[in-house]
Amino acid sequence: MRPSIVLAVTLAEMRTTLRLVQYWLFALLSIGLGCFVYVELAVTHGNYSGIAAGLGTFSPQFYVALFGVYFYLWLFVGMIFLAFEIRARDERDQMVEVLDSRPYGNAEYVAGKFCALVVMAWLPIVLLMVLVEAAGHLALWFDFPYGVPPEPWSITGFLI
Image (cartoon, rainbow, N blue to C red; front, top):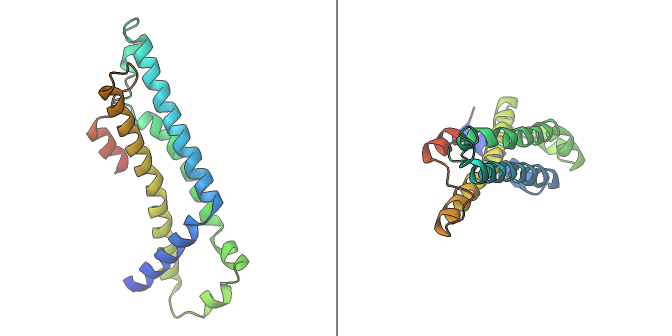
């Protein structure tokens, strides 16, 4: 496998995926759901941590994995749809003859498409983590009772 061919296929697929409405629909849906669960945990912790000791443990500071599960669910459903649509999208764009006549192997083509989908899945993940961290710091800055920034180690573990 030649890395230059894999990189070329990866960049072409990323460019194509960024133009798809389906990608942005699933990315925004998953980011919105992840933010909603974070806000729900923050409000539950802010309202009930002084009343019940058990509810005080629901601090969003340590539950990145909890709201990340809902985020991952919708994001990976969208990525599966995009992965199964690759060949049909190439046929619809009338690129099949060009792709089949190029001098690269099937492994390079599949590896490039896979790398593109991995990178495209990371973009919403990083965006969600930046949004949650910024919301937590703004809550601390303005002394808002709901929300704290997540622990950096929780975010690092979530991203890895």
